[in-house]
Length: 477
Image 1: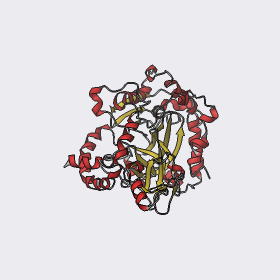
Image 2: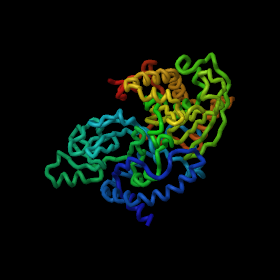
Image 3: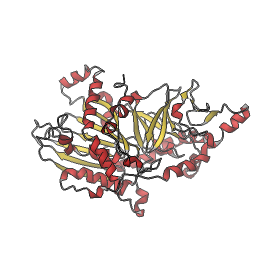
């Protein structure tokens, strides 16, 4: 039965949108819970296979282009790993494409026109159909390979290419070719497998739009059995306070550099002096590995914060601050205070580029009453000031992080890092995960040396408009 099911699903080409709530595993609780997650995956596969097969059987005509797409994707690799896993461990290697990635804050997306995005080096287009469902396609029309993100959304719920008017339904199938001489020719030409556009599963969770980075025939089954890396507390949003609502910024360096930076609290008083730190009041801290790195579940490290609560450069309130890395993008800080957690996602968009998502939440039951009242009365326009502060923080280290990324791709190597203190254990764990468990990112487009060799001005590297404002509904008004 499973073999027949796999053959049927493998014969499809275009995918459909997954349900708004993914099913299969629970949100990230740390590596110790990962084995339990695997047992639930088998149950989820059985529960959703019937629905997935129904979708697959509707789209068999697209199978001819699948192999070409997959071969093109698998050709490219890039930064992230210094040492590839041995062949004996290849079967347990982390899969970069069979994951959910946050790609945008839903509120920032345009609903009346297509939205261009990047993910793992692929150019993708997001659009909302007339059924109020988000869709994600390869951003290329199969006719003459122009970007579909320059097209328009028609009243019949199709995405129309702006060049010659070809139309595509919610699943990527071509419905109309205006140049066809008669209905029979239109049906024949539009029904050809090469007229399809690759479609990726999507879902919305916690104000973010997530894309499954694989458009292969089995994607519809595999994505249903896996949950995006969201934290437990956000599953019931009425129980949390968004101290800092979601903020997003495109960073001019790779996701590995961004993850390093987020996992390194000791840089804060120096890089962000006068903003959220003070380099004149630095006290020693110690970091410990609480749960070692594993391919799917990541790792956990803890920082012993100094008990002197008056020092703004220290974390928490004298208790240990835990930092969780959940592959492929999540870094969560769990502070020792009143249920405070900092959530960041570091999405790899293209070689040498990444997208940062950030928010700060507090447990409503543990938060002080004054904090609750202040957040309840906070005007929406205050988000602009919050984003202004976030940009000030990121400006503090963006220039030299871009320089670090360039150095590493122009003959340098993270193996040259000299890290004699315990505060670098988070970086050691990350590089171990990247180098021996994850392997290189299979970029959709090849990484060229020009990306890191080009000379950028300081203004280019710190362009708030290009990296944030033009995409933000609050800051672009």
